[in-house]
Amino acid sequence: MKVPNPFEQRYGSQVGAPSSRVVGGSVRGTSKGSSARLNTLGAKDERLAARSTTATPPTRLPLRRVASGWQTPSVVRSMYTIDRLDARTWESFVDLVERNNGIYGGCWCAPNHVEYQRGVSVPRTVKEQLVMNGRAHASLVVDQDGLAQGWCQYGPANSLHLKHARAYAKDPPLPAQWRIACIFVDRRHRGQGVARAALTGALDQIADAGGGRVESISETTLGREAQGRFLFSATVELFEELGFSRVRQVGKHAWIVTRSVEAPAT
Image (cartoon, rainbow, N blue to C red):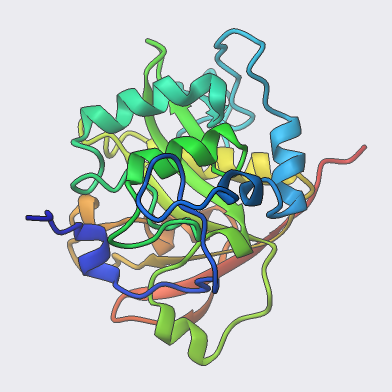
């Protein structure tokens, strides 16, 4: 009997599903042209992939902004470094996922990808193929022991679904070039600034890829208690602290949030 995926049970239909989808690896329904089609989706992915390499050994890249806010390293309570998800860091991502039971019962942060087919795709297989082909992007938050403790998934707007699809589609906001679809923190490291570091790192990586309008859907927690494991994309309050503005409410606690990111000056 198939075990229900809590991510899919909670959010059901998704935004922007394409008429044809690619299923990676040995998943049922995979066509011979699947791998080729993966490489045809989006110029932004090519710019992001150009900044990644499989030839260099694992390194810990310095944070441009420290995890607890816009402070100097001398006053930060706990220091993290930011890396990017790619073929080089795949095993670090795997370690984090496996430490947390596959993430939300085994979703592997895969259902947000437009290539994912509910009931057909194997989440880990799809995720790995997308990463190896430069089609899955995330900032990875690495602690002082070299272990990944969280991530922020982002990508070109046409490559990721957002939750609250029907409400979003009724009155779409101005077109965005980028989406942030998921922020996850290891269950033993929540409340320690990891989500902030992950979101900051993702915005830096988006800037490096050319910048543009970024959108996400998050939940407000003001005046209520919300368990972190249900906050798939952090909180509206965190997004606002990092320069996002609310656009429209699409759920009881959910809001579309957006901001523009500028490319670094050359």
